[in-house]
Length: 104
Figure 1 (cartoon, rainbow, N blue to C red):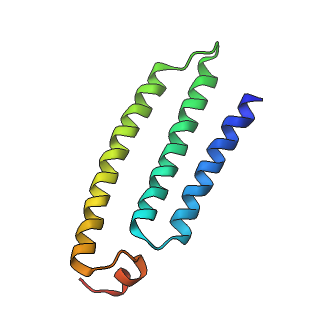
Figure 2: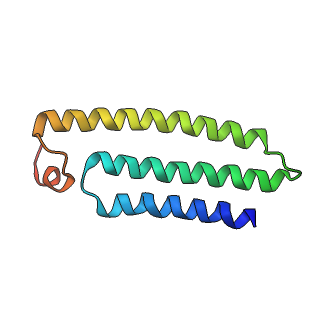
């Protein structure tokens, strides 16, 4: 029963993140979609690490990799937000389609 709950949560998070990437035009929402997909991957990694170790424990290697992934994801989002702020200051828009038409 718990397996279905975790897999459903992972699939739901991934679907929401992919929807944000595919449909949204706002750069901040796209970054949030990337972060949601990253969180779905982290949850899947922890889930499969707990399946492999058995006995109710989670493999410490899986936990350390997920912690590093969270740290790197935070750094990537910080750089992405700084690029969004720069693009908004320079072009006065956060719409990806309008920025695509502009030539740097």
